Length: 219
Image (cartoon, rainbow, N blue to C red; front, side, top):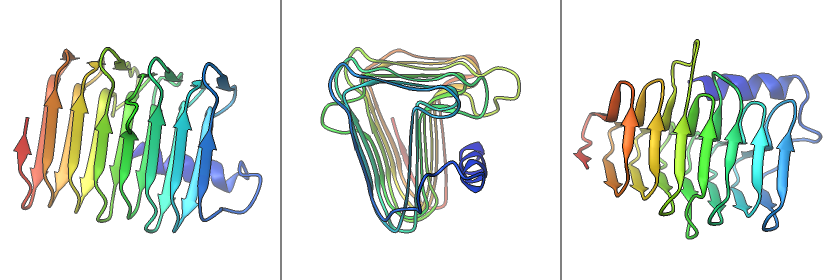
């Protein structure tokens, strides 16, 4: 997937100001604004450790609003306050909120829910390649939009991929995918559950789910 290759490329270019830490904690104040003019609004990376982002701020990045990776067994958690908007401006290969874990779980939304994610490619993108689960929970009345153009192959509102793990999407938001599916999920040897209390509009599919192996689909 695009997310892994782009992040590793920028890391080799020396975008990180210090060596990779075992854990990251990012906390923003309510009503604050975070802007990334060249790459991502908020970037985190953890090796064998957890990343936690407690977001009260509006975040805007030229590529992704939030880009987070965990290598090893670490988890990624992104929690936003009601009414927060996360925006990625890139027209391809970027996400409003992007998270990738090679072993741990990904939790997007948390107890406060997700205020809103908008991107030139994917509103919310999450992928695990180990045993971790993917959980996305949005707040009621939020809007998640992906508007990919050009080569934006993975465009969509919410795109998730889990290998040897479950995918759970509890959507209270309006979800729009202008390139592909409003909600696109893939689980290998794991279950996919989508609890939808929202409008889901996609140019190709409203909701598209695929499981291979022992996984089941429940919408």
